[in-house]
Amino acid sequence: MEKEEIVIDGSPLTIEDVILAARYRSPVRIGKASEMKMKRSREYVDRLLRDKKAVYGLTTGFGKFSDTYISVEDAKSLQLNLIRSHACGVGNPFPEEVARAVMLLRINALALGYSGIRFEAVQTMAEMLNKGVIPVIPEKGSLGASGDLAPLSHLALVLIGEGEAMFRGQRMPGGKAMSLAGIPPVVLEAKEGLALINGTQVMTAIGAIACWDAIHAARWADCAAALSCEALLGVRDAFDPATHEIRPHGGQRQSASNIRRLTERSRLMTNQGELRVQDAYSLRCAPQVHGASRDALAYIAEKIALEMNSATDNPLIFADEDRVISGGNFHGQPVALSMDFLSICAAELANISERRIERLVNPQLNEQLPPFLTRQGGLHSGFMVAQYTAAALVSENKALSHPASVDSIPSSGNQEDHVSMGTIAARKAMQIIENVCSVLAIELLCAAQAVDFRDPQRLGKGTGWLYAKLRERVSFADEDRALSSEIVKIAGWMKEQGVLEELKTIAPIE
Image 1 (spheres, one colour):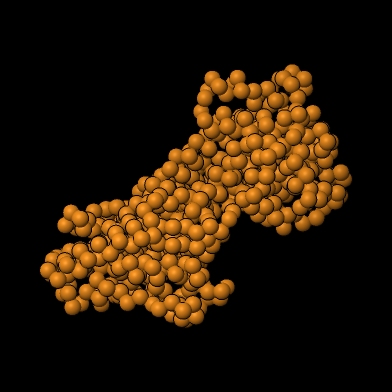
Image 2: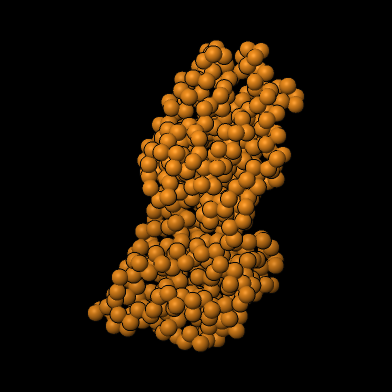
């Protein structure tokens, strides 16, 4: 992907924009239109302060303290106390790409002009992102309503010169990182602390990255299934368009089309009745299973994109209407449900992949391939335990797929009496997708090994290219060797964005 500039100007951000900024470090710039919106919103907040209006988070405490009046003189201290007291996250820090995505989405939400924060504060966050001052954000501590309070507080700490940050590969105090980058910390004004930490940007950032990787994993699932079908002398009729046109789910039709295109010109695929009438479900029903996940992912991507471009803090400032509305846009339920759905539909890609792996290694099922895909079974174990690893990952995914969104624990003295657990749902989904990629990598390695016992020259147009690329990275296993690093290598290769684009020039898959 090219390192192109991302402009925050009111136009909707895309999931691809998030990946560009988070994974490929594309620079970010706030456009003039967004700058003017923030300035109008801030002018209105300043007027409310002068008029000593009672506004939640501006001249009141937070949560259960929403009825406690705070004087204008104490408004600045209130914001600083808020950030410090809410920075209660624990656990390992999020990966830097997640923290970068969180920063981008927080900038975008604030730039909508409904938060009452100064343009200068948001501009400082953009400068941090561009110069690589990335807050250390602990991954645990968010209930997903009132948004991602704890993790976003750790982001805000660095903005004010506190907390911890990563800078040039080193973890250090936030103030030091800001100093080394030449960025003056922000001194918070009234309402700004609340504006910085009240929102769904952590769960949404994780969701955007996880959704992007899951969409690519679904394409790789079709690739792996196609190579496995050829290795197992699969029946091509199951992928005939006639079947899929009379049950026209979009994902199913696309998956079947991908497998057809990948195996075009194959001399390993068989015709119905040539060796058998029909294959096992893990081969024959791949389009139906993969396709259902594809359709779910399309829905999830739509919801994530919508949330990325929403104002999700509280209260919201409608300066042009002379109104401040205290509502609930910070509630993460739309993201929580989407992330639980993502966990389920991604886990299914690994479930069916592991069953194909079993067919490849099991001598009772693999169409006369050597047991566990090794020439000297007994002396060598071949890919026996690679299937164990796939089975372990699939089992772990089943536990992780239990929905987080069905749980709620009241907080803030029962003022916040229903929460989404959306960030837990998003974290689980991201871990599941990592596991899915590893399972698909194992299937690709097993399928390539199996093809070597057939004849790679008889592969289809797309699968032949795929096999050749795999063999550039991992050689045929003539004898036992440690496979762990090879699984990691192929899983990493699958995430390289250019690979599938190159494959499309050979077999135009989607």
